[in-house]
Length: 160
Ligand SMILES: CC(C)(COP(=O)(O)OP(=O)(O)OC[C@H]1O[C@@H](n2cnc3c(N)ncnc32)[C@H](O)[C@@H]1OP(=O)(O)O)[C@@H](O)C(=O)NCCC(=O)NCCS
Image (cartoon, rainbow, N blue to C red; front, side, top):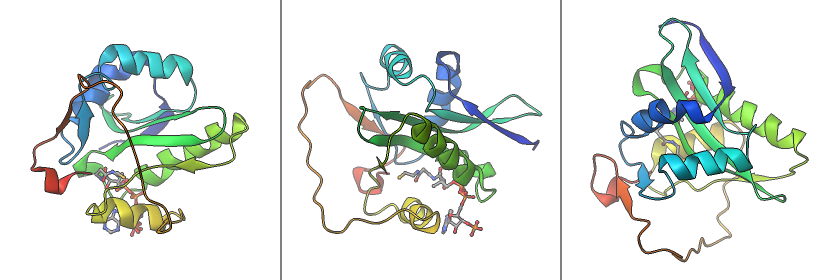
């Protein structure tokens, strides 16, 4: 295990990042939104705010955050660190990188969704200083029924 380099995600990272997502039990991966084409589009709209963590010895991607904004708020998606690399502050460093990138874009707030049952994710966000919002309900509405979510390696009850 080498030094970990935190750097912006680029379109060339797609295969490695997607392969990492597919190892994260409970991740919901969407057939359209997480396709190469749509991630490339996301990165064109948000070229400086997403991040990867790279093991400098092997060149492998061992962590990633998709991060973008709509001109008002920032949002994190698919925050993950490979299991063997956890508890080494990689998640903390990646989150700090994305938050700083959003600040440079003059974005004043950042949000994310953590499934209620995701104890590790919820412990992580609280530990690094994010505020749990128990006063909101989350709503969504699918605009394209072909955009199917599949959960990695698990029953729906374990989703992250
Ligand atoms: C959440 C995740 C990204 C954290 O990455 P990480 O690099 O291990 O996190 P860090 O080492 O920066 O952890 C910072 C602090 O968060 C807390 N934390 C992290 N993992 C934890 C765990 N498994 N249990 C309890 N607290 C935890 C700890 O306080 C930790 O500090 P410490 O190690 O000094 O005690 C990683 O566990 C992961 O990929 N999980 C699966 C995907 C996921 O749940 N993503 C979040 C979706 S909302």
